[in-house]
Amino acid sequence: MAKINYRIWEKLTEKQKEKIFSRSEININEIRETVEKIIAHVKKYKDKALREYALKFDKADLSKLPIKVQKKEFDQAERSLSPELKKALEFCIENVRKFHVANKPAEGRMVTIRAGLKAYEKMTPIESVGLYIPRGRGSFPSMLYMLGVPAVEAGVKRVCVVTPPNPDGTVDAACLYAARLCGITEVYRTGGAQAVAALAYGTESIKPVVKVVGP
Image 1 (spheres, rainbow, N blue to C red):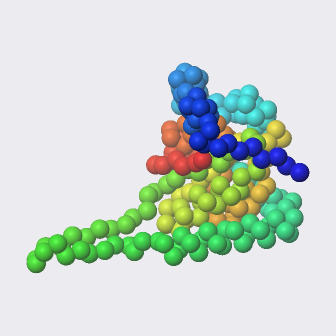
Image 2: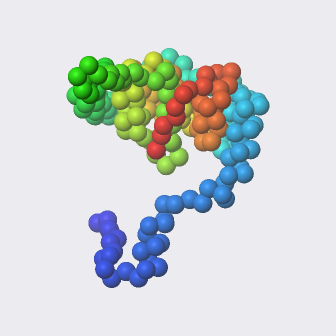
Image 3: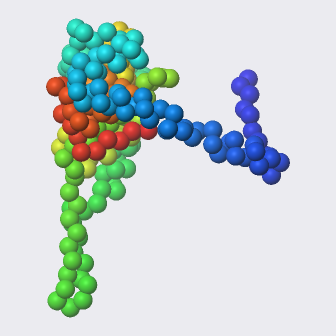
């Protein structure tokens, strides 16, 4: 039987409380220099830098693979998944889609301020968005559809995904299937700070986006 640790707040010391609050915090100053170097390297060397970092951080040799995931890989991913998993993903994505469709704001609204004075607010989707989907400790198709469905339903013209490759260069099959169900076909095998830099500044394979979202 699994053991669940718990704490009674009133019985904790101030030091213990502070430790609980700060356990998920990261001092960005410790990694700032490293990230700045990665960003500069991606800006200068583009796809070459992405391949170098894939080999360094993900142990994936992408020298003979395109950065962009190909259609046949989506097909292979779909074939590799069990019917039960595919059905579960389809069920979850449809639920998320129904929620966002129901909550989608009207294209615009007119408000009468006073006699002869009206104000109009128009809702327009952004041009593009990049979704960062992590990979390190497991498979996260849920993160993909929680970010991807609202973007697609909002009418964002270009929705793309970046996610770290497996050591063999493939991308998580469940995430590829979730992307296909969301209507997303633009997926790139790159992760980490280098992927975010590519989305921000662009490379030969990845066009820049106007917004990046993730965990």
